[in-house]
Every structure is written in structure tokens, then in C-alpha cells.
Image (tube, rainbow, N blue to C red):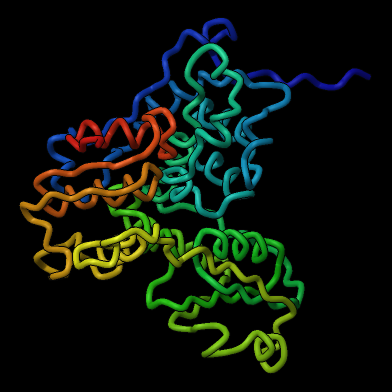
Length: 353
């Protein structure tokens, strides 16, 4: 007996899909967003999401999934968007990724799923990140999400660090029935998601909502716990009875260049600068007064051309800098920041030195 052939739900013939242009996500005008910390991208409507989803070539061997760090079933969730079943699309993503509203905004899709999209051989790749964000936001608006119900294994796992790595591990383990507790050294959960990424790219409320969902799944969280000082790993696996410990502390310390003047007043590492903005709420000035970041009317430069450098200089502009410059030793094409971030920075009048 021959295997059943699944009929495509996409109304567009295969030859027509390649002709559909990639849908642009609406965003704040550059002249407005350069002066506020409100999210730049405004999100897809249902119509835009379905139009973009119809561009999918439904590859027999989806290289997008192969190149996704967590193996999201892109082809499957995109097909559900085409069918208009947005909630099932969100549930499909959550089988492999418990943070779709976060990854849909800040994951470097151009290096992963979209970078291997077969459409990119001729036209722009499928907007996988945009679609992922759409269904996650839709699920939130509807107030409907399914919490996995799995039998407990009786195993306990401690996760050190509540950044992307720790949260991903916690989500995967709790879905397998293990009891998971996440220990965070800072007073707010999220790691680099909350202290290193500006509000205009990833609103803090999005992170809090994702954390609330993880609590519903059964993940436990403790803040202000410095594992190694407040409690040791030996104590966790001994007195506390954990069967395993995952260490996801990240790379929180800066690396300086060892050049004259780098320790002068007014010179910051990107880590400190963005942490002051995010955790100390300098982006809410003057409600929260962070005096060390009084940039109003001043000229500011960032050294580097990666994602963090662009986040820092775009934040400086929003804090009132008169001029904002990027100083980078290589060519524009070699800048490591995503092209879309570079383009947006230029539109916001950030200059290259």
C-alpha cells in the first residue's frame, strides 16, 4: 500500500509562491522611535502573517528546522498559519521552544532558520521570526495557551542562571516531567534578556509574560541566590536533594581593549551601560534618575559593530545624545550586527566613523 500523500493547505501554486514579495513588518517611523524606548517593530496582522506564510515552499527536507538550535518544526507551524489556526501554530512551536515571543524578536534568524531557507537562493527567505512572533503575540491576546500535563519522573534539577540558556533547559526539562528550580543571582529574572537587550527590541513585559507561563508549567524560580556563595553545588545535590545541576551563567564580564583612556569617566563597557539602562531603568528618565547616564546634548560613540554595540548606541540616542557614532575597524559588510539592525540605526541618524 502506498503511503498517504498529505495535501497542501497552501492555496498558492508552488510556482506562484516565489513571486510573492517578503512582507514587511510595520514599525515606528525612524524620526519618532529615535526618541523613545517603545518597541520598534509593531507586529504582523493576521492578513500579513498568512500572506507571508504562503511563501513557504514546504520543502521535503526542511533545512530551516535542521539549522534551528532547538529544532522548531517550522514547516508544520507555518502550515497551521496558512490554515488560520494560529493557536495550534503557537502550541506547535512550544513543543520545542518555550519562549517564542522572545526568540521571535531577538533570535538571529538570519544565521539559523532563515539563513538556510531554500527560498533565499532566488529571493528573500521566509520571515520565520516574524511569523513566530505573530503566533506568540496572538496566543497572548487570546489569553489561551495549553500547559503540558506530563507525569512526574520524581527527578529534581537545579538550573543556575535565568538567561536564555537556563530558561530553555528549564522549559525542556519540566516538559519531560522533571521538577525544576531556577536560581538567579540578580533581583530580576531573565539574564541577558532583561539586562542586556533594550526595551525597544525586547520589552520587559514580554519576558515577564513568558516567565509567568513557565511558572504555570511548574518551573520554580528563586532570585538573589549566588550559587557558590549563597549555596554551593554540593549542598544543592546533597542537602537539597537535586539529582542534577545545569550551569548556565553566561558571559557576563566585559573584555576591554587595554588602550589608554578606557578607564576614564564617561567610558563604559556595553555590559555596564546596558545594565544601567535596563535594570536601573535609565530608559524611564526622569521617573527613574540614573545620573551617570546624563547624555542629553552630548556626543556619544561606541567601539564595535556587533549586536551589543548597536543596542548601546541606539540606546544612547534615545537617552538624548546629540550625535551618535559607531566606530568599527572593518567594512560595513563585515559588521556582525544583523543587517536589519544596521539599517534601522542608519535611519535613526546614527553615523559610522
